Image 1: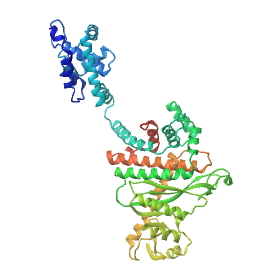
Image 2: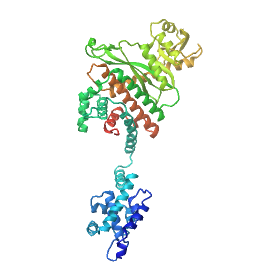
Image 3: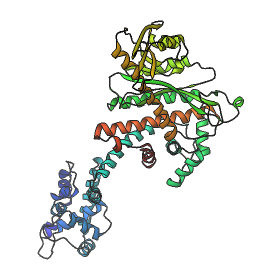
Image 4: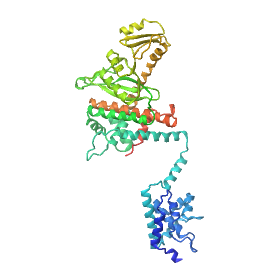
Length: 506
């Protein structure tokens, strides 16, 4: 008996090393085939082998008390069998007394087993059983209701967006003694944008919820490090990456998409003479006629809404040049079918330029022009005038209400193509999708600022476009992957909460 208990140390070492060659994802299963003590004893209720394995198991799993060790063995029948407890499980007093009476060679054996198994776990990480048990208990506490399933899928998809957003940009090199990282600045900016607050309010809200975070002055100082010329390529590169992400996920496929071009104003209140790049607003605002103007191109095809690019109109900028730049940028990113243009681009120069790019366009006619007068003299349901302006086609189509709508296009047709002409005329209504985009961006993703510096205004507007695209992307992924659509999707106010709760990975 003594010879059995006092095993040869070298022999045990060799045997343990041999049996730990293959990685197994269950620690008691690793210990099962090891013989580290006597398997039978007439004076003991439990074998020395089983007790040594139990103590080794406790140390490997870092279980803090003998009571918790006993509970772990009782709760898991498989662990109980693998450790060698066929019927009864030792009490916490039995375990404590056994450890107090351990001999030096038995302590060395336990140390050897623990070190070998721990090294194996470090080399091949595995989910420990107590983590599995906690996960099971959590699932039992949270039944698989429709809400919980939706929450899990939502978390999975939004984390994808946060990982990409986390790589958006660096607001500036962190100073050697700086307190906050670029991720901290990004988190506060998300809070400012999605709560539609000024930087002071958004930063305070974030610091209240997370106990720490950069102040509004820190945020403004980080943005002010960059000029408009620095920020423009930064955001254009990010919007390109968003399109690539949408392509990889199958949201944007190889089919032709319809895009729309329109301008929007961010009203300006202040001294126009002291602030450059302020232009006249298209519509009178609340007490001002001046604004920062942005021209944007976006996909308006059903189930593929996406902001592709936005360019500000500066004092010395021409709308014609902005239009061409937007179309060239969009043409490189997607397979463009038809562009729906606003009446603000109504000129022969713009129409010819778009036609030379090989892009089909549809736009409304300006009232009072000669072409408009020629069409308005017709009283039929659908009127087609080929070559009304140079080589373009004019269309007048009557709506169900009796009102006539007048459009011009470079799509070729004859005077008898009534069905095509009517389809083209009514197809222009999809341009209003970009107006909906602007409304969502301004109301739900645009932070507020009193800064008159143009780079700051540009940053806030483009950052709102980036967040808007992520919102669209998450909703489309939820629909494509899990069938969530309509009311099952994410409203903008809820998406704001989601972005603020889930943190990006380090």
